[in-house]
Image (cartoon, rainbow, N blue to C red; front, side):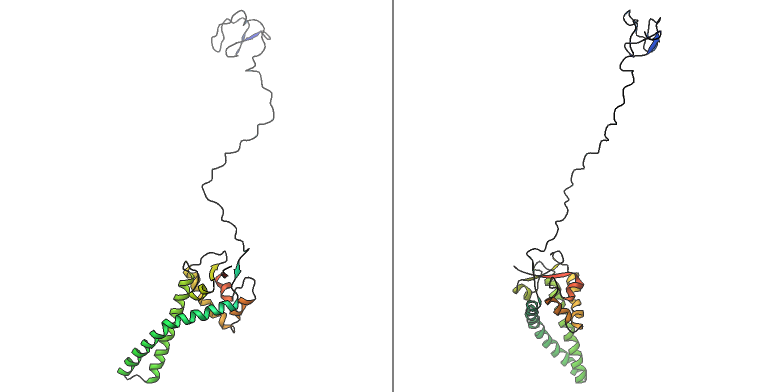
Length: 221
């Protein structure tokens, strides 16, 4: 009993000191229950301690994706001006071995067709020149872009000298990028071939067309 009240030993509810049963749960009071008792620990206000640290969500398990490794240039060599020049000469010989016979056949066909329609000789030569030039340009483009974007990453001339064309991270380039690199050579040659000469003194031996296309010419160690 505290201040004329007793507390139920089952639910802890406060009752009158004269009560025989708990008004909250109906529990009968015994003689022991009617003795003065302290407030049960369950209903006594609990001391407040420092707030428990907030729980953080469990880390999400990895889904198997890892950050790509950083590209380093240690131990990488690049093809300079002269070795690339030799590769160009080799490629030119290889392409012309295929183009010249086709050009001769086309010139013969154009000459026969021009004579059949009485085309002036100057006209025959002009048509022949245009067709051969287009054929040569098409052959050079498909050969270079196709070989440099292949698994070999190099034309036959570059392969013979241990060279390969990559992007700035050392990866294989696409046909579209190889095409852009090929036609960017027009810019390199238009400024007195200085764009080609740049491969001899730039940091990673990049010619101007390499800088435009974002490519490198690596050399085997």
